[in-house]
Amino acid sequence: MVQAALADGTAHRHSVFEVFTRRLPEGRRYGVLAGTGRVLEALESFRFDDTTLAWLEREQVVDARTVAFLADYRFTGSITGYAEGEIYVPHSPVLTVEGTFAEAVLLETLVLSILNHDSAIAAAASRMTSAAVDRPCLEMGSRRTHEHAAVAAARAAVIAGFTGTSNLEAGRVYGLPTIGTAAHAFTLLHDDEESAFAGQVASQGVGTTLLVDTYDVARGVERAVAAAGTDLGAVRLDSGDLGGLAVDVRRQLDALGATRTKIVVTSDLDEHAIAGLASAPVDSYGVGTQLVVGSGAPTCGMVYKLVAREDASGTLRPVAKASASKSSVGGRKSAARRTDGEGRATAEVVVTGSADAVDAWGRVPDGHGEHGGPDVEGELRALQVPLVVDGSVESRWTGPSGVHLASARHARSRDELPRGARRLSAGEPAIPTELVDLD
Image (cartoon, rainbow, N blue to C red):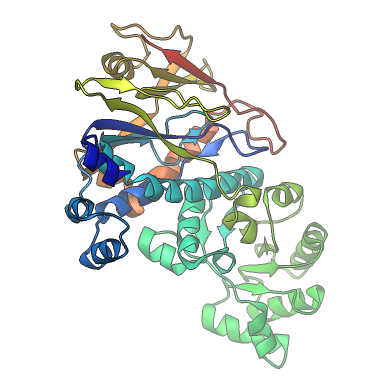
């Protein structure tokens, strides 16, 4: 596309691309935007080096003119979007990329590959932490996904409320709290369970978590307390009827005087299993496989569509795809969330129209500017923030600080949802999307 646009003179037309979903994955009531900070980090280093350019030319992927364009490629446009961690629904304009056609279209795969993965993980994580209520969820999925995806998944999980990760690289890069326990292999290495527990406690201290189901759970608990004393940090259950075992183990720990020793459960948990353990004396959940595969929804169906472009006269015109079941709404958009008197979200208000009208509406907190606006009741909270301005990345959204901001934003945004929106059963999106044309 870039090669053809360079050849016919349209490559440098001002263009607006938008990222959104047409629908949520089946059974989901809301989505969670995650990966924005990673997009911005990747954008800063998105370059075509000499080796890459030589390969593109040698393999005749593009012509010499396009190679020359790519050699100097730098994104100089602007990006706005929902703050990372924000809840979204169908047609929410979660990211808007504005620049020349050539420089903006090149970002499509970069943007979508990150946002589709990370947002899917965050949505699953949000359902899990919601089901867990105030019990911590711990990310343990690195062995069930690609090595780089594991780092991204840990980051997305923490944004959606997980309190720690077993992935040390994610901890190093993004400042995430790191956690972990010994595996069955450590117990099996030793001649008996007593020796294994004694070795772990000697190395890690009495606050460690001992895995007690390698052999017999009741005997394991007895040996764990004998090794660490009544100040043992926690025991982990990784198999069997977790709810029933937790009841038995809690009773046994209390009888042994280890009343403050916590119970951690693992073993292919998902949001439904976590909800099913709500009445069990469980203190925290370790989640792996189902988290890193999106708990049944490994992607969230985000698309990257051209919604406006400059015409031959230099006027910015809205454009839209009209294909059956894949139509889009043209024009650059502004979005806000409407809330009622209790601060509960009632609708996603997405407006389009002339650039001046959209800009004016977006600057007015209640949505009523000189160009008019939708007839609304209740408060409107603006959803879009600047992420890249004239090619310069807003660094507050990247790195460890970006994760902290995103995590806080998610907690506030999810708390804003109407009652019943966090149920795990299938249903309509948590709030409706209202599309309003200001022209």
